[in-house]
Amino acid sequence: MDIDRAKTGIKRFDDIIDGGIPKGNTVLVSGGPGTGKTLFGWQFLYNGAKEYGEPGIFITMEERPNDLRKNLSEFGWNIRKLEDDGLIAIIDAASPKIGLPSRERYVEERPFDIDSLMYKVHTVANEIDAKRLVVDSIPALGFKLDDTQIRDSIYKLNALLLEIGCTSILTSEKMDPGVSSNFKIAEYIAHGLINLELVRKVNELKRSGVVVKMRGTNHSMKIFPFEITDKGIVLLAGELY
Image (cartoon, rainbow, N blue to C red; front, side, top):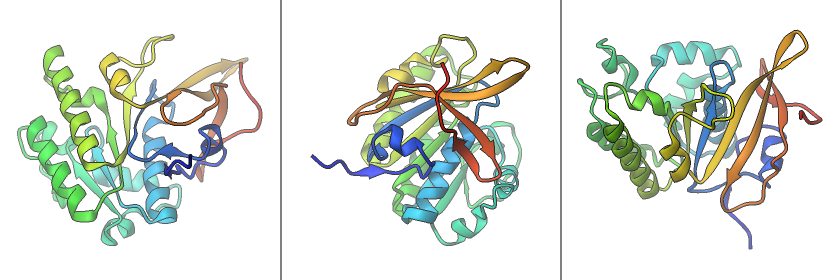
């Protein structure tokens, strides 16, 4: 049976998951600082808009949108142009959380509230007919929340993603070796889990990743090496063990 897929556009990665993420799935991308989690989400979103004509939403809870646009321009990506064309929408949930004003078109209300954020996402998804969505990041979602509130917030987020039908990527920090992420509930609700790592090789750090699970499709469980280049994430030939 043919599966409708959302291609990430990351060379070789789509081959690892048999052609792309099954559409409508939610994938958790987990890793420590510097592993490329945010970039992975943006590459999925940018390629979706630029190459496949699929509008997408980026919910930023840590970096302010102008900082994101500036950093992404280093890869030759004109995010502002895609926003003007209605192919990408950035929801600024970072500025309100730290008490700073925002001139963004889509900005979360102050003070930060998960219910109002979910309403904003639903509204924007309908406005641009979003097909893809990235939440960066799950730990930031739990800002000033206790464990029960964090769990409830993740469940609400998952319910919203299922309702709007976007293919979604959630990012999460992973601080301890051998642990997929710091938010186990996010692992359980996600259809897919990708772990990114920094691996010490002799006298330098190398980036690697592995697809731990991806429901609805065959996928390799081999560790893949990758680099961050001026074109974004690029998988290398060969394997790491």
